[in-house]
Length: 383
Ligand code: SF4
Image (cartoon, rainbow, N blue to C red):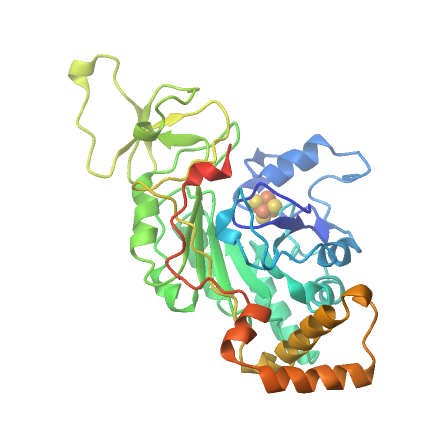
């Protein structure tokens, strides 16, 4: 979709639909995966003709996404943390593109070719999978094909607890990508990512949403934030359950409950005189009536995003981007016409002559100058 409410990106693209399943969804059993829920609801329609477990390709969606407008230099009133950055496109929110049925040839031709296309290079692509082992195999296969992992394609996985972190993060950091990100959503227990921190570039945390959502203990979120070192940390949402102290004035759908450090939940006794004093890491949470994109933690929002950098091997790409940027400026009336070899040579000479580190960054890679990220009131994102 060209626009999405997901806080850490601008858009989503799905070159495949369906999924082999994971700890959040099992065929025949169900689960809390929202992609499976939506797919199952509309199963049989032109958009979702097959059940969720039948993974299908959707060629053409990536080229369409690549053609979306360049958001570099554009402000996003509802997501100010993305201001001035290229369009951030989440690949695969309606399934898992690395499911077994999808072969590497398709991923090369549909995903990689469009990410590195002239249009695609204007954006940052965030590719999430719960199958990072297969993603790592794909990156090795790509190299054998003579292709390097694109600088603007971030390899990401998602984990829900310590077991899934230990199963997926060693494989994620094997992907030959410049940047590696982890989405800890829904966070269902304490997770220690410190063994892989040196190779991680982004941590996103959120609680669970939906009618069967489980509450997230704030102590789990704080532990990830406090141990992250200099890795950017993005706190997306509490999910369906808010800490009671943040729920003033918000319509509630449950009585308060207590969540302990392991995630076990118990109800508060009815008679206040018998209320046990909660432990230091126990949290009193309450379910709110509708999904609330509320993400204050200790009085502020956390919306750090990593800088997107190209390494030295991408020098050729950087130069082409600069030349094309110069070309667009000079030939604004004929921006889509391919420049002639003479024009390219002339512009290349100008770009090389005028290059400074400052213009390079402002032309090509709009980095987050402050790794601590802006302090943003999470309410700005709206419900
Ligand atoms: S891997 Fe993702 S899309 Fe597939 S079932 Fe799990 S949560 Fe849903």
